[in-house]
Image (cartoon, rainbow, N blue to C red; front, side, top):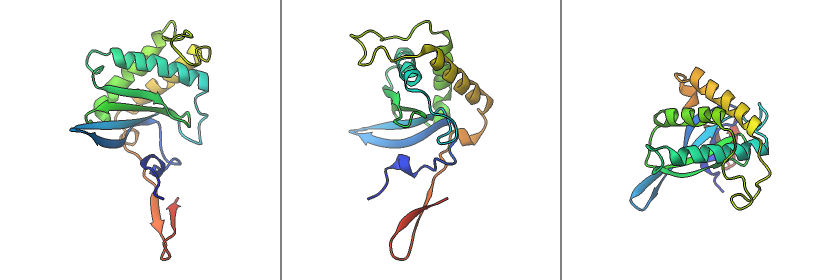
Length: 174
């Protein structure tokens, strides 16, 4: 069975950044999934669940209210490994083209006084939020993006080479 594309990314080499995960065609429209990697997998601690949940609410609200982008946003949500988020947008833009949007989104968390949608009627786990830790992670990631804006590594996935032996076995070359 082939690995899905996100599992072919070399997680030992990926750095925080904004990456194109996949481009799909739905009907006559391209849709792009972006990997917004906030921490280094298997090196830095993952984002704790409550802070991740708060970041999901805060940034989804920001993205869906941005006048230039709100009609392009299909989805914003956390990765299961808690090292980042997936953003799905209509169209197909290079990661650098959404850099300002995401930098603004993460910077906006600093000014949040509360997490939107944290009532029982609005959220399935409304008590599991941590605004202070969400601010810490957002501040750290925004500073990292700003400091590394010219580094191509924050926009280009490191791919894992998969070698095939003569007898058909496939493995990763580290």
